[in-house]
Picture 1 (spheres, rainbow, N blue to C red):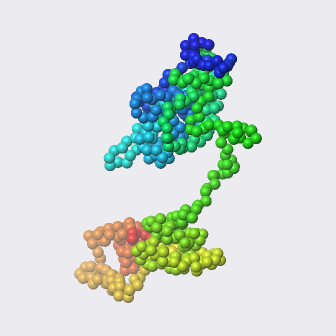
Picture 2 (picture 1 turned 180 degrees about the horizontal axis):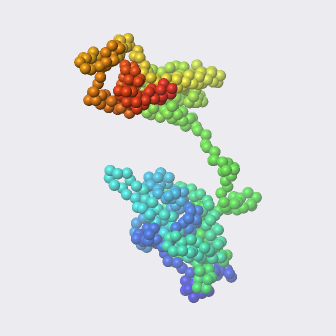
Picture 3 (picture 1 turned 60 degrees about the horizontal axis):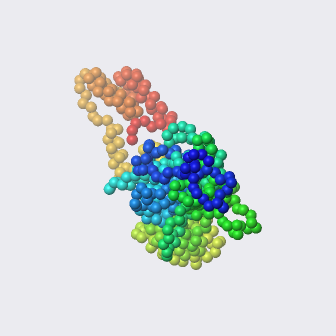
Length: 508
């Protein structure tokens, strides 16, 4: 026995001492002050996954090193099975950002109790803050974000060797004496801890000290030593690693409970569906669940039922839901009955329409026929919508359509005739414009410049009305001489392009 272990050796009764008992030393209390409960100031290392983190949680639960009443007077007295259950809930979250309301709902505890258990996880070094949540009046509350940590005492106790610096240290090895305890912790971490049931206690008793689950640490000569807490008085059995308390109700069953004396596997058995890679089979709905399922689907698919209360609709459809009707069959029945154009109360109208549904469609054949008829009506309505949209698009993309009203058509025709009828021109002496073949009218540059500018602006928008009118009046050769060959050629090209293609120029 080494000098350090001899000073901290525990005196045990003679009959329980084995010849190959390992050396024992005492670890200090496991308590992290508040200033070190942040990721930047933590002395532990960050857990890579929830499974490895739960190993350290079970070690802390069984070590007995956490004695908070030596440092404060309120809160938890020890690391309990409920604390292990809350740790299991946190291990399922990635990132670890639980809300107090979520933990209250999952555990059935009060907010104060949940905060006490979270404080216990922080004080043992298993949990540290990354971001602390805020609750500001008038703003949405933000949950705290935690990091899952492995305390440095856990590494020392099991002889775990790490490499690197800070919270990002990684495991590179473990002492031989710590492997057996690590295997036990792995078995406990693989099990799912159930929520502890609170039993009413009629008598008061003193808290029972937990069996330390200390592991092995490296001594001066590299030998592993069994670790016990300073307040623990339990003695290791069999000379190996001491037994740790099964926190969270993970006790092994007695031999009398095993069939034919065969030992059960410590790892939980998986269902056939999970072993085959499939999903976990869903539980079948009861009568109330089917009513609510049908009501929720109807409120999503029926337009005049949107916004209605799902529980009220579930009560209305209770008869058809109990008869095994699906949403398609209900919609087929509503298609047969018809609906009002204006619906003031959707649940009331639905109750009236479903009054005699199960008596009329009382056979599967009738239901199938109604569903088939409803599908045909839906297909007809879909085709009608497609044709209507197509006709509207063609009308929008096509040319000008004459108004349907006769009075409007007469007004439009009169306006077009007025635009096409040339206004009388006052012919002065010395001017000449070919009107009827007998007279000519010569325009000067001052009169032609604004007209040519207007024609060019019109051509920039893809319109050729002014140039076409000049070509019809003067002829192509005379118009090219007066207006310019470039202007007339561009106008003729645009007209030919518009006639030979479906492109329309200009703005609508």
